[in-house]
Image (cartoon, rainbow, N blue to C red; front, side):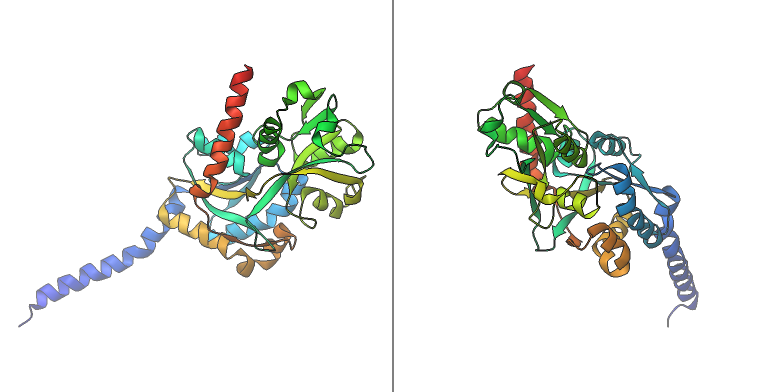
Length: 306
């Protein structure tokens, strides 16, 4: 005969366990009543705010806690913000993610951009004005080079790797090497004649920083007024990374929110993607190991000059 007192005790334990489940599921919200989502300044601050605010609003709704969009002044801002734990989710370029990784920032990439053609890669290019006489990089000796930011993949690290392979020391070959701070500013510097050639990111003829600037109606920016004189090998697309020590259920909730953004918040996703990107897909650190090796190479170049 079953002991009735045992059954009652067992039932009470089961009920108590079930009652605790919702509490456990909410534990991370008590620990993280607000999350900070930051983006590298691949475009100027107003462009970041315009494109990413609807996405941050969607994340707030989906995760159930305020998600604050943080506009940083430079690429290092996301790296240092995640190092200090003040930025929970960071939208990186490949090299800035790799820089964070090699300097000990405890983060994990979980989502990657995917172009409309299914590509998970893009290119670094060198632009000149379309009416300039320059046909190749070697034609620009003694001229001014515009780079983006020391932690930019397409705007600094890949260009320096390319120049080194051509046995070109940029600080000796060019009259000046100017860091412009953003990809948009690099194009403006080329437009204004501050530099004679600039580095930038480019996916294809329809997807690039320059094409985006043209579509925004930025003054003096026409795609046809510029010309590419060099295109790099493919570079793995930009990752989104969260802090490694976030609770597992919070990480899962963040992943689900990003992977399903196109279905759960189409308007916000379309505003971000501008119709040029597919939904984010999973990514792991191993995909960025070539970029880690790239920035280590660039660091060695700097050491040789110092």
